[in-house]
Image: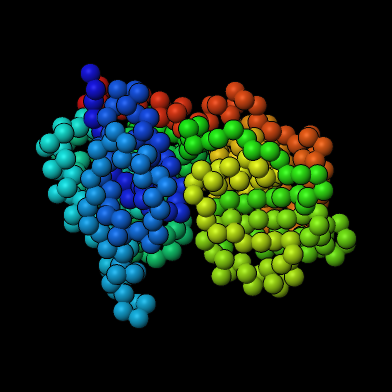
Length: 412
């Protein structure tokens, strides 16, 4: 018997520029293989800053999708760039709640789902999930792609208090709270010591096998070594300042140059911050900023790179960038600039990858980068084995989610 689940997600095609799209999209596409029919409730595309049609067919293929009205307070309600803070609680898309709740209830009356699933980091999605659960009584799974609160996050105290309230309600009223990393799971359990152990689940991110083409040919002999960072570079959480210092020092020592190394920062999302940093260190011939690519083209670029660059600061030790799983599937050498004690480094070591250096240490990076390039050039860089990579697929994660839905619906 096919059961249905109402999936409440802000990040969904045709939105462009968020790895969260892939998590929801892969779950929605894979759940029918496990006896679950997805009913997706998302926002109208007008709410997105940028859109792309490259995954729209996948999003609509065999899936019921309902979209409801939402405004971006920072864009649609601002006057001269300013808007009342109350309009951005719990986030800038709080207006979505007004249309999403009645839309969700209509979907429930029509399709009779057995469970509800909502996904953060747009907190309004959880607020909708909480409201729908209260009205319908259906078991609710709150998916935490990122930690919802930390000691100093969100920075605004009012937003932080509201996020903590929503998270507390998810733990109290939800059938399960899902985290994507061991550190986030442990932190959530610590914040709610009285909650049942079974209330918390770990379902990591992954990669979508269907999106990968056969590996393209590698760079020709004599071409510069291409080191690719694909995706957002947050100024605080993925600060490349020490990397740029290391590159400048290696260049001044004659160990690298435009003819030997090409560092591509693809779709950073913060080119306006990075461009003056590149100019300050005189790295224009070595570091280049690249625009966004369609998803499959971005994956193909990863497969063609000589090396893949991962950035993750120590203040994100309980997080793992979603691109790490795509990097593993690309089967190319990975240089991770991150804290050795964090979940990102732990995940890589567990997959047999130990080419890791501290993101905030120019000296450590200056030592690690030439060694990494030599290993990659010699075919000796550590790469995760096929069985380990297969275990990181979104197909495997979808099976875990379907099993969770089975358990909570049987219990309820």
